[in-house]
Amino acid sequence: MGKKSLGMIVGLFTVVSMAVAGCSTSAFSSNSTGQATEPKTEVTLRVGAAPVPHAEILEFIKPKLKEQGVNLEVVVLDDEGQLNPALKEKQIDANFFQHVPYLDSVKNEQGYDFVATTKVHVEPIGFYSDKLGSKDEIKEGAKIGIPNNPSNEYRALILLQEQGWIKLKDGLTNYAATPKDITDNPKKLEFVEVEAATLPRVLPDLAGAVINTNIVLEANLDPKSALFREGANSPYANVIAVRKGDENREEIKKLDAALTSSEVKKFIEDKYGVAVVPAL
Image: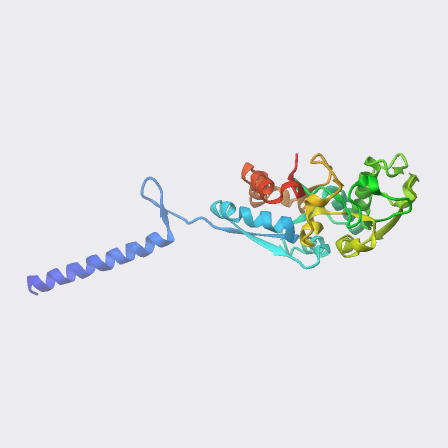
């Protein structure tokens, strides 16, 4: 074999060796000693959410979680009432749409074994009207719309009590009340109990209504138009809910940390203003 042929064979061997080495570095990374290490495994986390602002907040933290090895999938269902059943049936790993009083009420009703891992934000429930320019214009016998689910109905009535419009009986400690629990109604207001999501549609037929802010945003109403609303110290902070035992999963802890970061608080303040406020 001539020197020329031998040189070609050596060169070919070198090229093949480099190609093999190149392939190996795509599957493994090297540590400081030059030894190959196994690649990091990415974990997928499916979180069910209401469209606004919950899903938007989750989309904001996707890149940060990606850097930490968590592939966040945001699952938005047409019917928010299916987010707890989906969590129970393990279709999702967590959900983000509800506050603790609501979670407690449905846990008792449905027997869900869920826990809340972190508070994220408050959507201050507010009083909206197409007819009134201020709360002082309320007339005797006016029709007021309120949500008909137990926790939000109590919340609405408490808000009206704070304005001096009604007084509820003492001893209501379980975040549940209906108009039957009103002991004083000086304006003789008439309360119309309505499915929360439909309140914006029936607003023209009422003197006003107490509406959850996420519903206000979804209906493209101006949250600044509320005649009065809750403050940031409301007990109705929206939370991440998981199946009991999953609160210790590393990816859930990373989710909680991302949602309570200073970056998310600034995102909420800048994007939503008075409509959504970071939880205290």
